[in-house]
Image 1 (cartoon, rainbow, N blue to C red):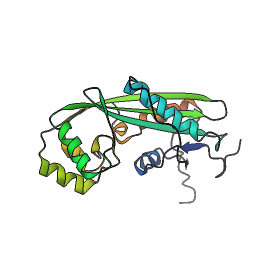
Image 2: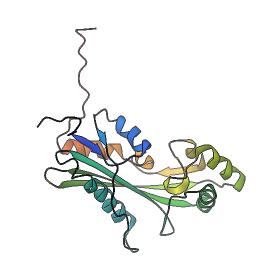
Image 3: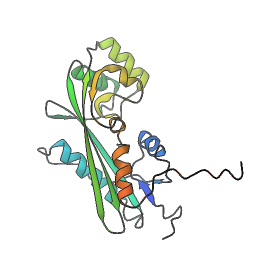
Length: 207
């Protein structure tokens, strides 16, 4: 099989610039496609199963357009006291959400699915991080939201930006999962599906 721009080997089913930046770190060529799928889940769905299901749906939603590719879908949920926190959308909601999280530990669930569009085989991995914020006041939260603009972020923070300073402790395995795409797991899934990720040896004959 020859892969072209029209038939890329790997497709990221996400338009998130943060996930694209993480994909870039793998050093593999990939295309980007916007997922279009129903993201409604049953109210009693556990975040682990919810993120796994939505990562699969996102990958499946672009399968028709890339029938020869490996499609990467990912989803993330922040959970406090059993409640899934929505993306804030406005500065005031972001501030209120951060004040709820202050001095508390919340869960951050992230799943990634790699779908082989040729066979329909999908491999999925889920990461859990426990995120403990330090005490925060309204003014500090307001300044943070104005600076980092995390209005489209799960939990109302950009951990890869200034958001890291909001925390006193984080517990998990792969820090890239906090940003939305667990690279350690993704590299393993792609390798299992036949994508070599070892760096090619430099040709020094022309140097």
